[in-house]
Length: 441
Image (cartoon, rainbow, N blue to C red):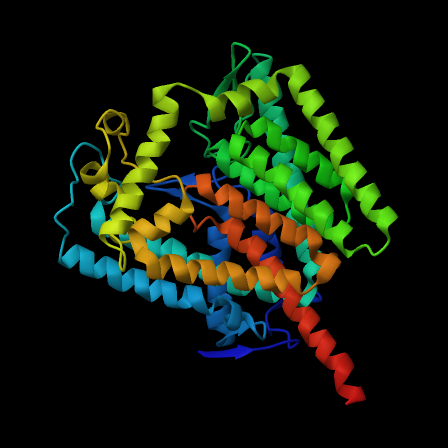
């Protein structure tokens, strides 16, 4: 199989006027929020978009070549180095275990080697999805964004339905695969908070990405609806990240406005919107219960648990600064580095740092963290190359960077899909700009 960059050449496999490859990629984009709903529960939830990515791989084999947008691997190169670094580090840690290894006290999913290999496979799928979706966005980024929003609107609507039915005490219409979605107590009632996801944290991050995509499309009312929907996830980190998104967006656009009156209006809009939202959240008690109380809580079990998980990961990173303890091996070393054994006994399936930056530093070392941050910087620079036209995408990346501090994993596919949309759109702008300059030269 050859590997070639094909800016405009369509594949042989087609349905109507659109290649099957592109149809499959668009459906993958729309299906990204269904990571728990509409899944087949085996040893792990098998997702619709994972089956479609396998189909795309088979199409590539059938066509005899892997297609990608020109410039894709310039952006992706740090992560292409990170994958073998993670694989080699995992193999070494499995063959030569560290003295801090401790697999007692919890039930692992597949064991040290199995967990690490599973994470490597998810990582490889994320890389492949990035290549596929970057090409699709390069071919027509607006179409990809519209399919993204179609999935986001369905996910948000479903989240509201689950919230409403559970709040009213009615049977919730749980989709196939949803055995035990996350709930939270609000006003004495147990309500669903995660929509089609398993956890509200994932749903909130996805809605943040989706709000950025909607604003980039200039679908402002859709963006506002998706932005408001983050409130039903009851995720403090993502509510704060959404506030950062709107702040950065207004500041970018105000900074590009040479008319002082435009900057003043932007500032008034930002402050007026902030005051209105804060007033609503204060009046409903949401701000106090789900934001301020979570940040300032004196409950040992809530605050110290997170500190313990983070401190354990940082201790691993400082003791093994180059290689870390190995991909997906944090849980097998946590008990050695924990500050207290109070919390570990309640985690039947092991522990995770709950912070992507700590996860990378503790499991893949400073090298792994540096490679991941380099990739993030390259995606950011691609978004920045569009000026105010891509202000919403840049603001979205800023919000994601903040929310990553409380997010559990870097292999979640919708994050890679968002990065692919940013990258594919930028690569197309580069090619179009070159084409316009060429005749003049």
